[in-house]
Length: 491
Image (cartoon, rainbow, N blue to C red; front, side, top):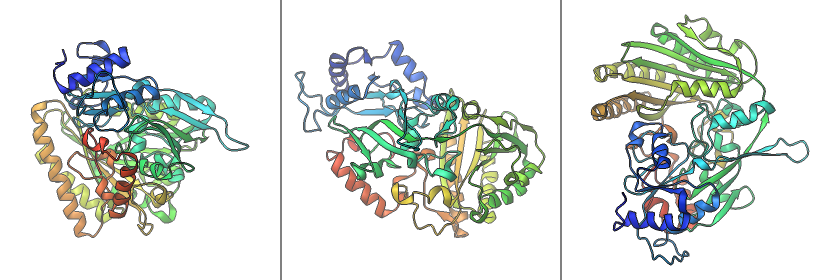
């Protein structure tokens, strides 16, 4: 039961009276289902006083007007003014750390009901525009588009929500051709802190449109994104698991693949150096995709020559590839990630993998640990294509090839949380030191992989963070999304 004499209880009561059944409380099946749908067990163990499950942008607007009565200037409520209603906002709930998109004792706004997907024909020969509610998952997006032989630059895992991935930048199999996922957005529908529903695009509120491309949850609640589509049929891809003995060859192949001079913009690769505690086994995993139906394209020849333990490579569609990604990252475990960015040289890759390999001694005793070091190539064709149009701060990199390093961790027992966190911090610190000695570290922190102790927004550079703060003063002058929304990464 909610304590109605508490601040949060008053907030939930006000919401419930105005919004009715879309507000759920502990013990209610909607409340229980929402909590159980988070990616990580850490988030499922965070218990809000109530959960609001809007089905329309107008319901989001009403909820925000109630929650911000005491901090925003416009809303009049006959129930009185709920003071300091702390809240969280979730799209797909795929961020791993506790409180990222949930809030203990506060109000969680679950946007999963905003799941509409509609296609609008383009003008003349222009491709259609896809309007997607941010509660949709990328799996549902591809299920809609595949039969139409259309694609969008979107997520690689079916269960990831459209909203969070897009606002953090977003890496896609199609990134080398179209840039970050956020770069393909033609319009954001946003509810501002005072409940006003607005659009942000190249023609109106251009400053807000820019800030939402990497600025995360600092400006409002995005309820819909409009995405530019393109023609897309089947593609080739899958996952190949190889013996760890191929590690040295893998490093050379990864650097060569990411060479800007010969980068194939239809190719995508993630190379992961992985350790399974259950098996006490190290392997290297290659996720290789080619966005044309071409079997064994030459760009992957160096990898194809290495021995394989298993392979799922086939001609298929995006729905199937995204479902495979989901199977590799299932819900129901304790999860964590941390990240940094390195230059794409064999020396920098080697230093990073060497540090990861040495770190295994600190985690081998943790039952059921999966300790993976993923490497996402970030060629200039991806990060530089629209660098001035997003907030990520990756201009002026002199066309250097980069790699986003993702330390991805899975384990089972809450008793091991501190040990995992300590080992993750130590490894990131070691990589930072060792790669810095090679003058091959980049300051960029990819927010969608970042640990809660990393300062992702600051990594965009002073000019961009100052500009983000200016936009914040315009659209959230009372700092609602800073002071009342503690989750996520703040400017």
